[in-house]
Image (cartoon, rainbow, N blue to C red; front, side, top):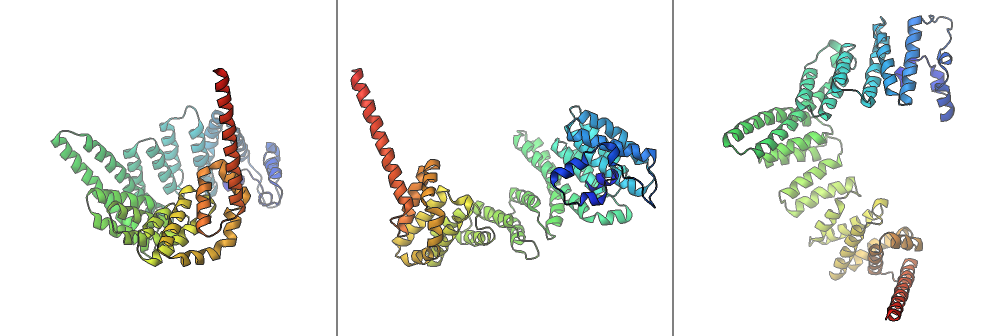
Length: 445
């Protein structure tokens, strides 16, 4: 929007004013004549061409805001003439405006075709190199979304080999990302080949397909290895590489990659890295101690993660007292989060932990944990209003929560009283309905 405001000559002071949102909108939607900033000392007067360009951009923006996409496309065609401006800075601003607004207009235009997008992207690549890498990446994504995998790969390959002095150096990060997506697309094509080979009945054709698959595997693996070896968050690329390694039964290399991604201190903290490692270990029947170790790190990063219930189940299968104590603390921490407060599975998990601890004579662990949370939990989970709400949403939840509070040693709470009152009222209503039904049946006889 900064480029558009600069092109429309909207003053900086207006953009930074502390007026309300409605006032800013009103100022922005003033008639075209009021948008022009009068000349001041030292400023060149606006030429007729620049004034026409500014008004055309304003009209195009208004058409887009009111979803008049065909009209906006006509203004876009006229505004494209501003690329002929001899001022370098103006050309850079205009080319980015045409690229961003043009793709938006074509996306919503009822008669737009893939060829129109391709023509726009190619023209913008050649109209300035400042955004070359970004435009190539966006063009590739658009082709990919339309199912043109090979064309998308071709676009990325051309962009990856692009060099233009200092401009290519300043876009090195984007070019690295383009290189990564080259490998990602090789993986997509490898997946397509895998699906087609699985359907082939003729052995000779299957051999040809397998060779093609292996070619794309080598291309993708080389590229993906280079990318994921550099510190960063590479989730989709990691999953792609692991999928291929597992297909070719290279579990050892897959495990090394996942462990490096999860535990290498040079990489940013990423909960997904530990999720992927856990899922891999689980698929390959790793011992519980490894699964517990992996989920323990995940729990420290995201205590409310959906895999925490599995973590508690694994801890329950351990005979170590510290693991049982850990399970109790983790389960109670989980229920402190709003998203888990009414989850029946989480409450059932806590109930099973409490029963197991009592059966093993470890009630002192329960008392210690409960003493720290008693005041908070009675206010957070066991007020009378909670019982009424829980009854409406899930009657099973109320029963489980009553069992939990009983196991914790609390027998008389407002929550329990409401539960008894509501249960008695429902029982009375059922008896009345049954009596009424029996009377009507006797009258019919």
